[in-house]
Length: 376
Image (cartoon, rainbow, N blue to C red; front, top):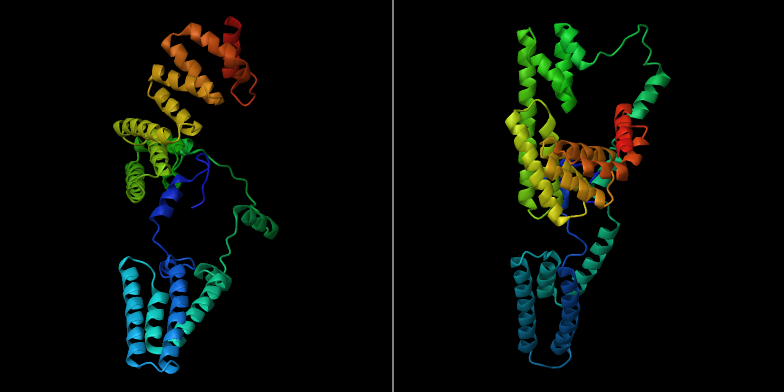
């Protein structure tokens, strides 16, 4: 599998790729570079020489015919035993077994034919296509991207709508929408679940309509089932590759993602945060320079209100040069919560100028940092 940076990797896809069954065409495909190929070529060349010499003894040396026959039987038995031994070791012996059979029955002619067949087969494998590539040439999969779909809709006039319409946020649908609108909104939120939908789900759970409450509870149960299913898949992948650090990161990201859904049981979410921290720390033992894992531990400690430990993690990350805006603000917050105002002033003097100049940050945040810089 191709390597990818931790920040850009789809961990769920990585897990599914590990658990995906091997393609039947790959399982029955013999590699052109198996370990027995070199042995086959050597044995074939030796057999050609031995059988040629033995044929000379039989036809031209005037020797008693029983001696060349015994030599032939001994050589054939040796090659057969060698092929069987390689087979017992789990090696690919199709060429070696064929060599043993044809050289036993036809001598030098079988050895030459087996070697020629091996060379022809190697040339064919070098030029052959994988089954999926061959199938794609016959039945190409025409996947249309979203931008192409939109472009086609515009050019074909399918986007025209004679009446004006607007989109209502899910929270407003749960408060003000009709029963049909609420049911459709819940179906959409369930199929494309995001932690941002948690307030809308909670509003649906307290709806006056019993049907809406039941549908919301069913949707949350579905989210919890998906949580369990994904966890089982990751654990299965870890069973196949117990020493793969990427799977440790996948498990940490999984617990991290489900720690703030807002719809799971509060104790389960707290347990998810703790498990995410443990797995991030386990990953850092193998890759101590992972900024993603380092910052994630600090963020989870911050969310757990473990201010002192979170401040230590943020300070260590900042000392390594990982100056992420949100992390700097979390570091300020931790110092303020701990009452370490002197350390907070020093941190604001060190990192505050970079924060106050970030236009993408909220105005009140920049103004607060600017005020602290004046005081510091």
